[in-house]
Length: 88
Image 1 (spheres, rainbow, N blue to C red):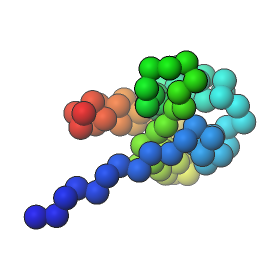
Image 2 (image 1 turned 90 degrees about the vertical axis):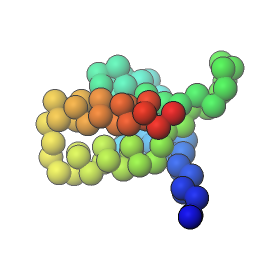
Image 3 (image 1 turned 180 degrees about the vertical axis):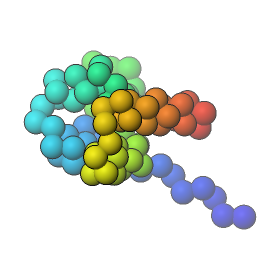
């Protein structure tokens, strides 16, 4: 039996570049509006970097390319969040 491949995590900087988001504040706004999954904090410190599972960002990019509406993006983000919780 083969072990599951570990989830690849990407940095906030990489997420912003891939989604053409210019600033951290804009990324936070996307999370608040429900069109971007919330980041994962690797520890509890105030300067801890945020990371995202690459597959979540890939799914959001694919939905945007497909021309999905903001409502569809929000539904996708909810689904991705539920999958993340279930896997934890």
